Amino acid sequence: MDSVFIWIIAAVLLGLAELFTGTLVLAMVAAGAALAGIAAALGAPFWLQAVLFGVGSVASIWGLRPFLKQALESDRGSEGPRSFGTRAIEGAEARVIETVDLSGGLVEIAGDNWTAYPLEPDQVLEPGDSATVVEIKGATVIVWKQS
Image 1 (cartoon, helix red, strand yellow):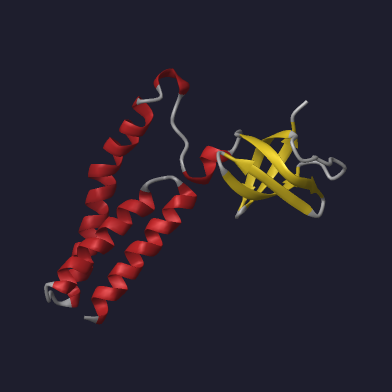
Image 2 (cartoon, helix red, strand yellow):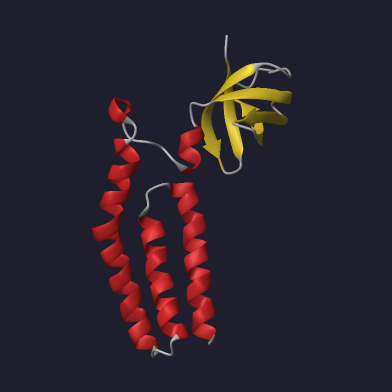
C-alpha cells in the first residue's frame, strides 16, 4: 500500500509543477503516475506499476497532449496560442495596492494580490497607479508603471 501513496504524491507534485511550466508535459507524466497508483491499489507488482507509469506517460504526451494544446489554441482565433500558468500573467495590468519600490510592495492582478518590485530601481508606484506585469519571479511580479 506504500507504493500507492508514493504514486499519488508523485502525481500531485507533478500536477502542481505543471502550474508553473504551462507546457502540459508534467500533467501528462502526472497522468502516468496516477495510472501506476491505480495499478498499485489493485495489487499489481512494482515492475508492472513502473511499466504502466512509463507507457501511460508516453501515451499521454503523444496521444492526449496535442489535442489539449489544440483545444487551448483554437479558442483564441488569430490571437495566437493561449498562455496559462504564470505565463498568462505576464503583460497583464496590475493595480497598485501598497507602494511599490525597491523594498517591494503589493499589487492586485485579476483579483489576486502579488508581491511586486519595480522594473527600474528608481521607479516608485503609489497606491491606485496602474502597472504592467513584465516578469514573474516565483511568487513575485516585476512591474512597469504605465504612463
